[in-house]
Length: 326
Ligand SMILES: [Ca+2]
Image (cartoon, rainbow, N blue to C red; front, side):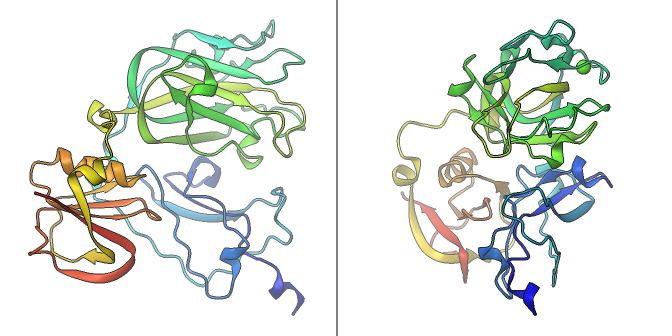
């Protein structure tokens, strides 16, 4: 049959969250690819950072360039969860009334409208802005966890105005120096009143949040920020502990086994970690941690108190095992 040869999983977005409106829930990982559309393919989508969810959805945005024939053909959905403790570390940080700035000014829609706590007021850059930027100064350093953007409920015209918007958080007032939080905004996130959450992974110290639209991105025709509200959630400071300049992995740990998973019961802690270094740091900061396993593709970091003599292991291509070297 003709359609069976098309990459049916391309562009499929996996989301998890508390809302029945799928667009209010944040995506897990990147949209599906043609390579993931092969018969019998098993694909894993990490939902980072861990957050509370009741609903899991799969949807295909037909506006994505690569999507030829949107068609869900799903054999099975499986879910892995963290302990509840991993989901309680984010707390709201009010940005209402913080100083806000736009790269160009519109007479009626000032930058401060994005941080006034009122969903009916919007910040809107001026006309002819070659690369619109909206910046909020938190006036202090926080351990940035997640940024939530709400668009105005009356929509933003015929163009998907949120498409290509990059959310960044960092210590520099210049947006180009700060790392993005999540992926650029999509056409699906440009619907009236859309609420989109952008995890800042890894958590980082930040004073400034910016939104900017690079006009050179595909599909971006008239880059315009039309933002009803910016909201922020932060982690406790420990999550942002400064990484040491030395290579932590080499200095403190050795790779003990590649392609193996620790099966000893009761890990000290299960973490979400976006890098081997961060997983190693979690272990260093835990007084009893003598070994850990890390799965880069899943972002999973499991800490253990076992030494190499005590580790019980099973073959698992996702994980590598590291032990402290004393
Ligand atoms: Ca507002």
